[in-house]
Every structure is written in structure tokens, then in C-alpha cells.
Image 1: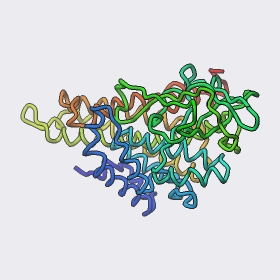
Image 2: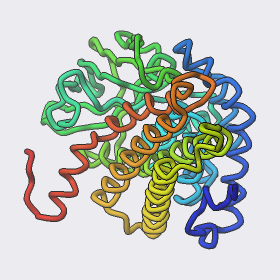
Image 3: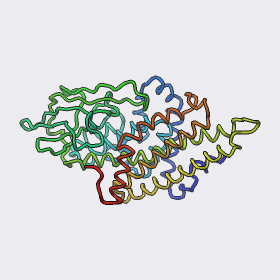
Amino acid sequence: MNTKSIQDYYLLDDYYTDEHKLIRQSTKEWVNRSVRPIIDEYAQKHESPIHLIKEMGKLGILGSFIPQNYGGSGLDQISYGLIMQELEAGDSAIRSIASVQTSLVMYPIFAFGSEEQKRKYLPGLASGELIGCFGLTEPNHGSNPSGMECRLKLKNNDYILNGSKMWITNSPIADIAVVWAKDENNIVRGAIIEKGMAGFTAPEISRKWSLRASLTGELVFDDVLVPSTHILPGVEGLKGPMMCLNSARYGIAWGSIGLALDCYSVALKYSLERNQFGVPIATFQLVQKKLAEMITEIAKAQLLAWRLGVLKNDNRANPAQISMAKRNNVKMAMDVARECRQILGAIGITGDFPIMRHMMNLESVVTYEGTHDIHLLITGLDATGISSFS
């Protein structure tokens, strides 16, 4: 079995620098060393290995594209994508932690924050000493963030925040939350909310079947006093959170490839070792059909993500292109995971193999950062110029 041809069927390594390959390899080695041996147990117990956050900080995984003078690694967008790919090969929960910290917490503070806010929060977030979360989705507003009910009301020179956010990764353990709410003029503003502020709670959401190694919760604000120094001064309107989501969606487009490759590698190895009717099941045409179709779709997704990374590095990637890659690559990973589970037969549902865990995680990945159908409609809007939703 040529492992390299599985991972890189179209020889995209020709387009990666030595630094890209080193970053990918060091992330892979960390996942093999620190994530794979423990992740199934944590998922089975519905617990999160939060001790890994500081390890990711030491490796430079958190805030990888944030400049070094703010504690980040100063890497390019392809490096960020390759990191997300290797993390999600281990588990979507680990990629989610890094993705939220980098794209949804550090990025808005870097892009829209004051110099004081950048200096105060970014180095701690990059090291993993601080944990962040991102508050946009609400109980009544998921795909329609413009309908948000969370409110910032001016009081003297500060603000009072009321409302709630839902389905928030890391909220139960977060030290800070980047929260988006409407002010009295119905303008969306970003605010940095710190753990311990009076009236701020973050209850955990339990009994999940998906992303079981990730902590998910709510953000509840009951007359929380928000100093004006905690408002992000550099952006107004939904442009701010949408730019954050575009960065996270880009990471998911890469991460889902890592997950698919992990499933495919397991299924291919199993098909070559599992004998039925006196021969390996890889001998049979239907198994070969599954394997051939899966590696084809993985290769197409890799090409899409690589080209998107080039465009991101050149500041030419648009939101519709990012939506297309997120939707296509997650759907690809879902299809690959399900076909791989069938190749493994009954044993594929056990914790001895990662495929069922990956399958369950994808049920969250296909929904968060924009659902599959919403991204499809974004592509439809871009193609026709006609919006199918308000």
C-alpha cells in the first residue's frame, strides 16, 4: 500500500513549501502522540481533554496566522489549513477548539480590537493560558443572525448586555467570550465579555451524540455591565462576525479532508487484511468501487482547498468560494465516512476504530459555521444574483 498516494493522489506536495510540510508533519506527530491514544475514551465519556489546549499553544497551533508580535505564529493561510487538516484527522473536537480560538476569538480581536485589547488578550490566547469562545448563534436565531435579540444598552459611558447565545463551543471553560449584540441603534457590535462579570453565566449543554469530546454550552447575560473599553472599536454590523465565520469555514474545508483521509486509510488497510471467501475483501469489485470513488472525491476536495488557500494568501478569496469549499468538503467527508463504515462491517461501529466517532462528529460540522443548505443557497445567490432568503 502506497501511503503517500493515499494522502496526496495529485501530488500537491509539489506546491507546498518545506515549511508547509514541516508544519503538517509536526502537527501530525503531535496528534499521533497526544490525541489518538486518548480521544476515544474522552468521547465515550463525553469529556473534553482540555489539558491539550496548552500543548497546542506551545506548538504554535493557536493563532497560527496571527502576527508574532501578538503571540501568534505568523504563518500563512495554507499552513493554517494543513494544521486544521491534521487536527481533524485526530478528532473534530480538537480542530474545533483550535478553530474557535484562532478564527473566532483571536482573529476578531486582532482585526477589530484596540491596541490595548490586542496586547491584553492575544498572547494569553495564543499560549492557551486563556480560553475563548464566540457568541453569535442564539436560541431563536441560527441561520438568520440578523434577527439576534441580544442587546447592548448604553449606560453612562458603558453598556448593559442582556440576552443569550446557544451552541457555543468552549463556553463552559472560556475565560473570555467575543459576543455580538445589537446596540440601541440596531447596529451589531462586538464585545469582549470576561468570566466573572456579574450576571454572566455559561451553562453546559449535555447529552450530545456528536462532538462528545468538545464542551458546548450557552452564554447567558443578565444585566451584565460591559465597560466601553471591552467593545471592539474596529467594526460595526454583521460584517464583523461574518468575516470571522469565513475564516472558520475555511479551516473546516481543510479539516474535513483530514477526517476523510483518516477514515479512508483505516478502511483501505482493513480491506487488504480482512479475508472473506478465501481472499481479502479488497479483491471484490464493489469494495474497489467504494475505495476508488472515495479517493477521487478526496483528491478533488484537496485541490479545492489548496486553491482556496492560494486565494486566501493573496486576499482574493470571496465568501461564496469559502462557502462552496466548506459545503463540498464536509459533504465529501460524510460520504467517505459512511462508505468506510460499511467496508468495516459491524466492527466499524466500535471504538476500536475512529470511523463511527468521525461520522457522529460530522453531524455537527455539517451544521455549524453555516448549514449545508445555507451554503448551497449562498452559491445559488452568487450564480444567479437572486437571493432566495431575506
